[in-house]
Amino acid sequence: MSGSHQLRNAIKQQLKARNLHYADLAAAIGVSEASVKRLLTRGGITLERLDAICEFLGTDVYELARSGRRDTPAEERHLTQAQERALADDPRLLLVFHLLSNDWDVPRIRGEFGLGVPDTILLLARLDRLKLIELLPKDRVRLRVPRDYAWRSDGPVLGRHGRSAMVEFLRGDFGGGDAVMKLDIKEFSSASMGLLRRRIERLAAEFNELAEVDASLPAEARRGAGLVLAMRPWTFSLLNSLRAELARPESTDRTPPEAAAPARTRCRQR
Image (cartoon, rainbow, N blue to C red; front, side):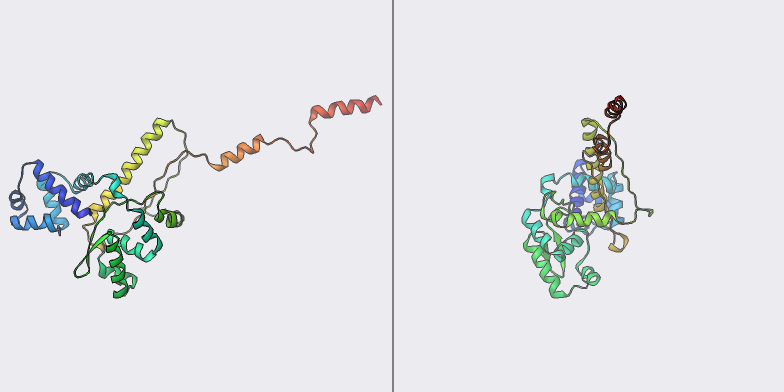
């Protein structure tokens, strides 16, 4: 289920929960009831109109995205092994799928990356056969997987591209205004580790929710961002090397003081 579909469903749920009808919403935002039905069925809700809907419902876009996202079970967010394998095997296919899932349209993908029409059609047809998108007339597509899909931790995509992407990301400059990087090493109980893990998962969910909200903005008003969240039981290798050095026995070519003293005594007795 795409992010826009989730938003539309969330609006319908909010109307139902408040015992409101399409006609009530239509009157509040200044359109016909037929227009509301069309917007909530086919999509095409502008950001300005979405703001007006949220004001009428007494909520905000962020909370709408969050409530819509709750409808997607976690296990349904993973692509299948076969889908991941096909994407991992073809970088161009992976690129086009990534861009489509971030609301790029087909003409812009062609223009930005110099893909010819025949190549684009073949790539889109493969994504359609993989059931990742639905290919529609006039170069339009619809996602057939959740917008907040997740790569399998042991799957083909991360296995083939994850490490190189991580290295490239961490080698970049984190000194800009929109960049932040923190590395702390502390010691925790198991209970605190569990709490931190839940908070990290919550932040990752909010990262995806905000992306769903901003998906309604024009592509030129958005820019790519990477987020790495990681935590595991770990001891810095420097500490381990120091422990090993301190535990290392003294070299055998040095005679311990307690062994040297008796030797000197024997020499004087002679």
